[in-house]
Length: 454
Ligand code: MV4
Image (cartoon, rainbow, N blue to C red):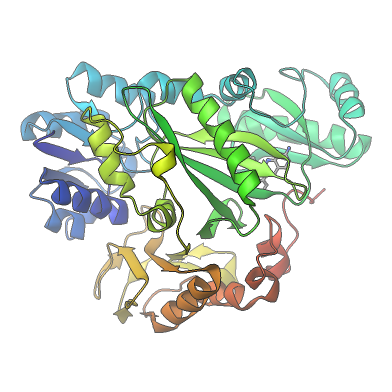
């Protein structure tokens, strides 16, 4: 096993990784930007090195500085967390070349899943359903019309390089198709320097459900069920749960099998997530694969009683998975609320600043993953996550009551937060019944969703 690990990240996920290392008896080296000098990840790691100015591009994204810190600190491995360099195949390659283990999948696996067209092709080859669509790129307006006619409206126009909804347009007829084709193309060119477009059948009122998988370097892969991630606004998730109230045991089995087929076909190792769109009839379609640990991983940990970050480290160290599929059983239910320093009444505008009053909940079934404390200032340079409140219960009802209780206990003064909106979701009768999909939050907020916008 490793003697020392560098954590190439900040915030709550840096703490999460440091804690897993400590539980494994591994020494830790934190890196930090000038804006994070007083951060908890710097204090809790065994050692810390400043790697540059506040801007991510000058610090947490600076590969050469992180590798230098790793060399000076003589670490055996680097954990990238999520965001920043976590899905950067070039970084994974450099780690390998420097004889430092990258705690994640191979650079090739990152590369093959990072390209949306390649990922879609891998899924198709592995026998995993993808959304019906054009065979490859759609070059012009005439071809777009022909493809749309074949698929039937509504359709979704997507930039091949797209992500987070950029370069994506829904079309319900020939007029909106032509308009959407050009506006998606222009946006994609401007945003990604790549104007390539393809067209898919529009999946109406879908769920966003993802399967957690884990593979070891000996070729064994298991899945740890799904997370329901449909409570989102503009591709920012606000609440996630495990299991999904929508997924039946039969659907879980099918989605699990599909996820394993894809993971096995690319010889995937370490933690990964396979995202699906699921329509209300239970048809599921591969969207993309995330080759990192995700923000919402704790709900899976609570329900499957595993430590995913510890397992990531053990797998990267060459250990075999300590369980097989048959050993994994879901127990109860878990829910996560991401508490962000944002103003839901003002278009989720970031609200950085000093946390004046600060008290986070506790008690049975409540877990809080946070790097924040009273007097801490949320910097404006990074994401606005203050804390993840994760609750678990014997069933979803108990978890829901615990979450309401936990959010009521929260006291965060000095910045605006998303808590009141999350409390409103928890009170909603449809949410409580588990009847919700990707459109839920837009409807609750009374805003037009971007897909239905013309
Ligand atoms: C879709 C879709 C409906 N139909 N594709 C948005 C981001 C990109 N990764 C895929 N996305 C979607 N693709 C078809 N054919 C609806 C979405 C979508 C979505 C997907 C995942 C998570 C959040 C979302 C929010 C709005 C729309």
